[in-house]
Length: 391
Image (cartoon, rainbow, N blue to C red; front, side):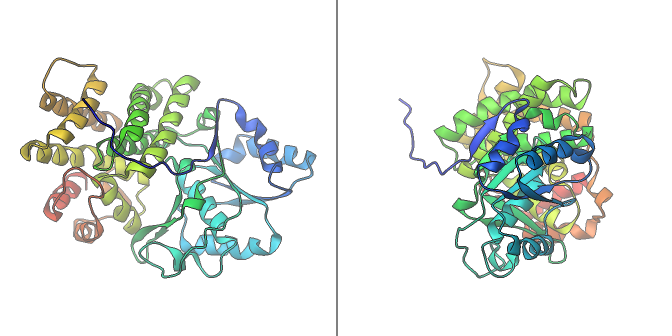
């Protein structure tokens, strides 16, 4: 008889999910006070008209607001610049509307507004100061279906001069509210949809196969994977305006944030982190490029090592991806890899050299890489082979 191993669930944001719910954002903001700092991405959200509509609603409710644009991955310098400017304004709530980088930026700003010093002082593996856990209330509004940052307690901060991506992390940094509206993802460009979707799928696969997976994360990840499987290719080709598929992919991304927070990630993210720290490779592109070759090495090792527990987990995903039954686990592990190989051929993400990486840089990446909670540990040599294959 199967038993349930122990696990712990940390806090989650208040999650409000549904098409059209963005129109109520001003009411949520008002519940926290009358002075809001709103961080958005580039021009697409402004061009959609939604930013002007939100401003009009806030004016009607006599809510003061400042808009800040975050156009790239958050750096220590950009976060410090925003917090220095707005500490003196007694901000009641920080709102981040955008992709994972924008949400991470907002999360870090909300965390740093009550703190002294610079964000680098508090980063894991970089700074030495201890976080107080105080923060300004924070609302996350994703406009892409990828990182699931709206449901995580860390903000990833990039420093390409020193070549790292590190987390500002505390249980208190979970967003207070996540407003998850599939309509906001309709304007996402095709390549953003692909890269973000592959990031969410990678997070679900890695949390389901993690050595720290549990019954709680399993039950969430598996259903979310089925939604992502239904959505990825249609949204990447001729069904970009299908709101039902957009909703399924956005739900999958949301759940991937929850499962990674409770089960951890694997070797794809262990390599993608330093890769994105050293070079301007979008995180979703890094995960998408690494997904098949990393999983091919991991699956080979768990089969060679006769790791039956891990084989079953990969086979579960293989059965889901191919609607199969009736064969041995190893058969479906191989079917799982076949689906990933097919995605690689269809979706055609750019090679790493497109982002300025050379073969001489591979050693820098693998020196900083690790396998996180992967069921198979990859050697530095194997990581080098993987990077060579997508360079």
